[in-house]
Amino acid sequence: MMISSWRRRRAARREGKLQQQRNDNGEIELTVPRDFRCPISLDLMKDPVTLSTGITYDRENIEKWIEAGNFTCPLTNQVLRSLEPIPNHIIRKKIQDWCVENRSYGIERIPTPRVPVTSMEVSDILSKINVACMKQNGKGCQDLVLKIKSLAKESERNKRCFVSNGAGCALSEAFQAFSRASFDENVAVLEEILSALAIMFPLDVEAKGFLGSASAMRCLIWFLSSGDLSRRRNAVLGLRELVSIDERKVNELSDMEGAIEALFKLIKDPICPTSTKASLLVIYKIITSSPTKEKQVKKLVNLGIVSLLLETLVDSERGICEKALGVLDGICNSEEGRQMACNNALSMPVLVKKILRVSNLTTDFSVSILWKLCKKEKTEDDASVILEALQVGAFLKLLLLLQVGCVEETKDKASELLKILNLHRNKMECVDPMDNFKDLKRPF
Image (cartoon, rainbow, N blue to C red; front, side):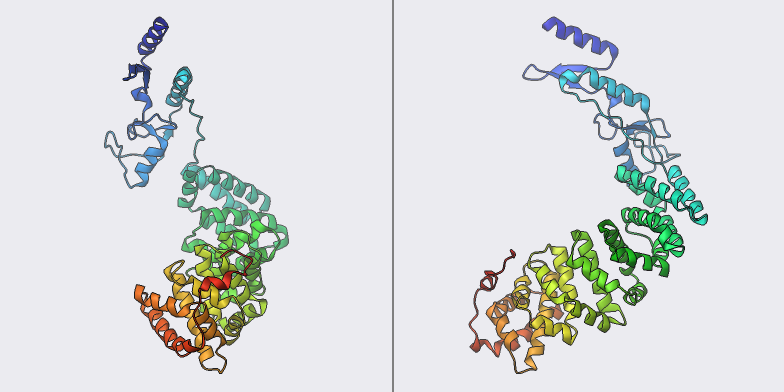
């Protein structure tokens, strides 16, 4: 056994591939040959690539070095003539052979890595898409977009390469071009382009300009209203991109037939948390920024948005909770919205429970909604909402909020709420707010 071990060590040293030493327990330890280690991490290279200086590094490490703004070789400090590293297949093959030879020591063979896409390849694909658009070649464009999706999903590095080389802009322009032509004939290619665009978000200003054209927006609304789940998800993500910074697009969207109904449906029948949050954000923009916001709020109230939001708030994650409360706050700016909220049994328990529980934003929105509802009741003989707020512990929650601290606007509303509630405290004894949830079927 000892002779066999000695022969194996001697053969390995002779080939210059292996160095071994014994640890304190007498076990043989394996040392990775220096040529197989990345000069940056000193670990075994999994995807060796060579720079223009002739030095080989592991791809992941050298790309992080370049992305950090370094344009010199880490080892030689020479300025790089090219930022595109070249795969070193010879070293990679030697490393794989070394792994196989030493598998008895627990070394696993590194898999052959996929060669990432280059900037030149990306530019070539995008130029072909441009040609296909000019020729209205839907099938050719669709095949190229499928290739982009496949490559972009292979690795984060590929995705960054497409984004940095203007794929978002090229795809948005293609979406606009095919949406102007016969829609029925181009549904398939438009769907593929939108799916690829969703991978490239967020878009730059130029790309949003193409996607925000009248024909492209009508196409997005059509996709948003269709039955295909993937289509609807990608469409609402596209609309979120458009309304996030451009109020003109909010105005155009609010005037488009079927937009509000489609967004409401996406909240009522959710696909995923991302699409729900995007729908809530788009609706919030419409009911707070659009010139026709009163009309849109009334439409949403008639659809049943108030009860839907309150049911959503009972058990939702932070992002959805914040956006749902934001929409409800906007809805309560209208008389119809406040009336529907006052008549809903969930309003007071949910709103009071969200104060100081989820985030500062949910606290601000909850106090704002409570303030609007109680101010409405103050001007009327019926004080049922105020009494209900007292019953679920609103008075104590607001006192605690003032002690903990909040933004000035919320502080003013909380102070005014306390004055309103204090006038009715003798009519209702405060109880544990959790008692109001014991009959609910959904967990809170």
